[in-house]
Length: 100
Image (cartoon, rainbow, N blue to C red; front, side):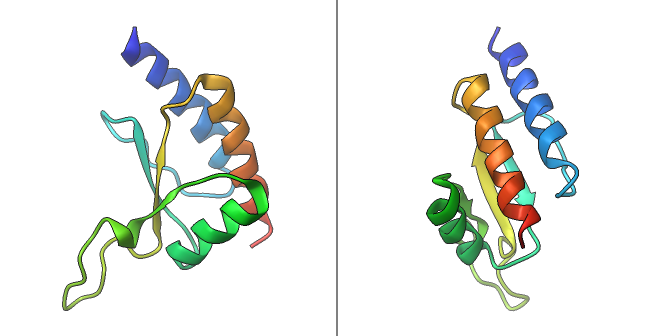
């Protein structure tokens, strides 16, 4: 049952976000690790400020290396809320991203 619910969430969210982001659905997870076109920390702050949606900046999850931080320009989205809330959040993220 849980797998089916997460497949539904990923399907709905990726359908909404795919016009504004290059989406790659993970084989198994409730996180969406998404590349974004701007700084991940600034994206996360402004998304929260403008749309009241929280995502985690990817650079917070990775360590700096000689080549840079592999999480830079990524955010982690947790699809743990009910389906209707995930859809609402995805629509807000899309609206925000379209304005970048």
